Image (cartoon, rainbow, N blue to C red):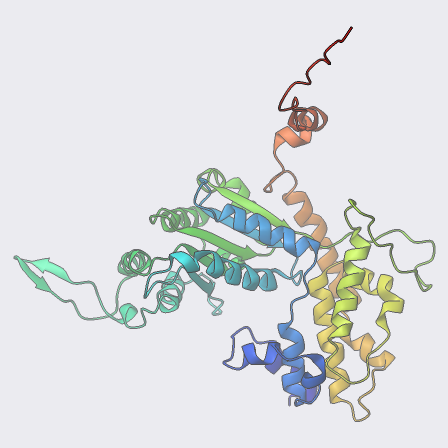
Length: 399
């Protein structure tokens, strides 16, 4: 039997966009508070909180999506819950804006699908190919076979299309619909393929379709696949979406002072980025009574492993619990239930440590030049002083 809390979370956090989402997200907090609980929580969920690491990931991916490089496969890899799905949604919106001036009628420059997780021991290429075709608007294609030439006549074959035929349909659809980027979320499910060599060859063949770039979104499980297969590594780049590092404190059980704002010309600290993300979320709190969580920002940063995505999920759960209560007030018991269990945090922390090791020196921007020759490169790339446009003329001498 589901509870009101569970119903609220399910309705508010689904991935599909509803027709009224755009109007919903445009509301200010005052008007949002007048909505039913489900809509309020959905409104809160739909507001992404921008921060430095999210901006970096977006910038790097958009840079790699440009036509003027030979990268055809990009992976955004990070801890489960770090905010990769939010990043992928923002990247999709940015790509549509970039391609908008070039879109012809009937074109779909960006397709988004989730790798199938249908309970089978092996990843289903048929399901994945069907999802790609459906995303491109080709709903009827998977149920028909390709036509063939028999004794000089065009003959249509009946029955379900084979997997190689679906692959050919995808190539035709990509060319006809002007697809530039194919985003595959939950890429971890691709690894259920028993033969990883076949998986890599298939992914490579998809990236060989004229001008198509693949963007995979996944957890650390896909890191080794993307770095150890030469055919993929040669033409691929990895963008690592990392949580923020927790600052040292003298007493973690005491209330901590807010982190200092960056001075002019300085980059912000990790603690400051997390603190501001928490502050922005509380300004959007979907309940009339707002919990004073800024006083425990350091403790929240610790239990969220520095991840703004995990923080957002904790806050969503806390808000849902608050909405489900008869008093409408937040309590310490609600906060205890909203956070991850100690066992879950240990597992996530272990995944983070292992993932960082797997991706060490394997990501976009981590070239050997900047690693081994950092100081020399900085001096070489410094701006060269330019001489004045006109040389100063000597003063004339008068007797």
